[in-house]
Amino acid sequence: MTAAAREADILLVEDNPGDVRLVAEAARESGIRHRLRVARSGDEATALLRPGACVRPPDLVILDLSLPGKNGFEVLAEMKRNEALRRIPVVVLTGSDREEDLARAYDLGANMCVTKPFDLREFLGVAGGILSFWLTVAALPGPGGRGAP
Image (cartoon, rainbow, N blue to C red):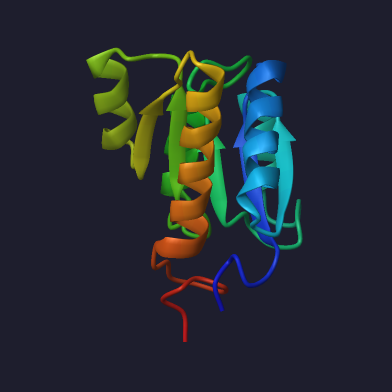
């Protein structure tokens, strides 16, 4: 069963309310059944990802790098060190286009890095494309993943 065939759990780690609204709108427009949880800091994200904090781990994490508390790099590193979380796809959606930031995110295990577009329609299209790809196209291991038996 794909994540899209059941309700997909998405964790958005983003402190900018405008970007949260845009990703939520893109998720609604995608037609993918989903539950969007939002962590507004790196500390809140790691608390939500702790065992027992939620019924099941998210199917997808969309992570900003610039966050209050723990930054996105720290959240990503913690996820990829954790056996229960390391296979969750993490898409870094960041305002940074600095090559060293993108390289560091990939080195820490990000599955995809995308620089946030400034144009509203382009942002919605990019966010919708991310959700569609990771929740309906990509073959993922584990419960609900397209590669699961």
